[in-house]
Amino acid sequence: MNFQMYFQVAKHSLTVVATDASYAKPYTNNIIVLAPGQTADVLLTADQEVDSYVFGATVFSPADPKKVEYPNVTTTGLLVYEGAPQKAVDDLEIPSFPVFNDSSFALNYFSNLRSLNSEEYPSNVPQVVNRSLLFTVGYSFVECKQGEVCEGPGPGNASIGTNINNVTFVLPQIAIMQAYYEQLYPNSTAVKWDTTLAQADDTFEENFPSMPLFQYNYTAGNLTSFFANFGTKVVELDFNTNVQLVLQNTNSLFFESHPFHLHGYNFYVVGKGTGTYVEEKDSPNFNLVDPPIMNTVAVPSGGWAAIRFVTDNPGVWLMHCHFEMHTTWGMMMVFIVRDGDAPDQKLPPPPKDYPKC
Image (cartoon, rainbow, N blue to C red; front, side, top):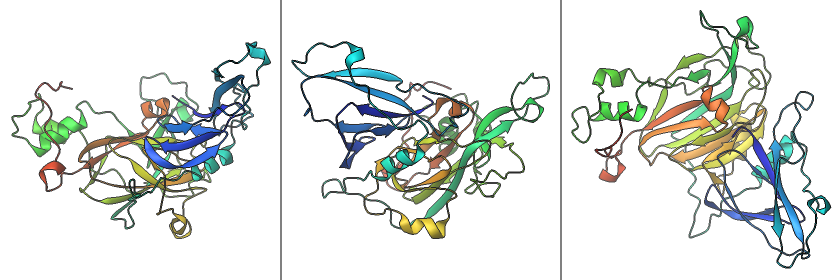
């Protein structure tokens, strides 16, 4: 829930044929990398000697090796060929992995993934962008409230939190979907919550920043303040908009490779890189032909990831870091995709027995 992982089967190659359930060009490697929330469909050919082979996974994390330590292999299992002789586990070869903080290995792995882009499964990556967004993602301090006893590492014993564009998400008392539907259809009889229009209007703000509130050299760690703002803020998007979102990792407190998941959509990962994203330098290198199709992208430690998607699914969609701890600390935000004109482009009413929040 809180780490990315390497995975390997000893003495075997693995061929990735799908990422997050979308077909991919076959890519063969002896190790794959998975972030929380990601899946890979992998083909394995049993072409080795008749024997038993250990498969295993271990942590990939950009953490400082002077400060943390992880087991060489976190978890294991056995691939046993039919007719294999019985052996003690200690006599079997354990998979060998890169060092746990080998960010270049992980970036190279993800950079080799491509969508299938065949006639039957074309890659319809948006070539023109209608809405461009830049989200910084990182850590921040949470001020100790009056009357609380805090033991955090920050000023005044402030604890550690997380943010997107310097905004730490606050969970609302009323579900945003519920409030949004109440705003769209205040007189609807499809379902009735105990929610007034005034309460719905106070549930969220439509002013989530499209750019970071504080602009600086994001990977240099030269912030003057490490405290973020708090709020329940959303980005509203029109139906059928071509969106480009650059997720920029920041050196606020320390780096981490954050896996970001978007509900309700698959997206194209058109680019990744290290350092601070510079549009004039980095966007010409985007893959707009056959980028991998995913619903979770691992933002490189000290780097950035660029995704594109088309807003063809109306509704309220959460985007969040898939590290459970970071989500609870507020590293999430919400997209509201407005209805289109056609009947099948509108948010349907909730069922009559939909539970109240």
